[in-house]
Image (tube, rainbow, N blue to C red):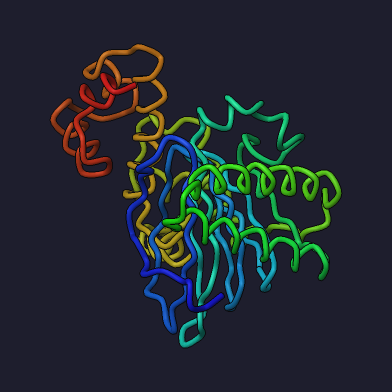
Length: 283
């Protein structure tokens, strides 16, 4: 499958309103920052030594493992330097999945279970079937033969059913996700409970009885970004939820904990490349 791998595309936005499939293989990979997106992601590791961080939990992966990541979950791969990194990444538009039956395809805690990592470790025969199906999807999704797009849609539906059955058979079979630091896990939980409340590095350090220096460095080391950046991302995720519920841009900024609209506007535009008002109009 190596000859069909693609150049890595760093974008975190979908260009289609259905699904997109990628096959990446790099001899070395630069660190990936914590990120989120409004669509579902199926991550299938083919080669490499990877730990995956999702909302404060970490799971160690081996080639053949699957991760199902829900919309707006903060996540990132933690890679071992100097090793080949190969994976399949399938993005599924939320509305498209719902039009196909939504959670009926992926029952239980597969998707849309907050702060839960759905980790699947298929059997050898299941991995063979998955790899073949992913490969077929890549070929047709980027193919130029007549009917390629229609064929890709059919393969996608077959893969979705295959994933559904793997989830139902493999419940609890994957490696248990864990937090590497009790302190950082507690801080993440505190932020997650209400990201809009006032909080600074000084306040959080005092609340958890540690120095500012220790908290800042421990947080950056485990999460991969600064505490300030993480709080901002959490507030912006909340902002998207409020905007989609009909709140105005100015009110949303206040309700998300930003001190003024200018700060909210700049943070939103920097993260999503669009103003809060325009984002709301597109929904």
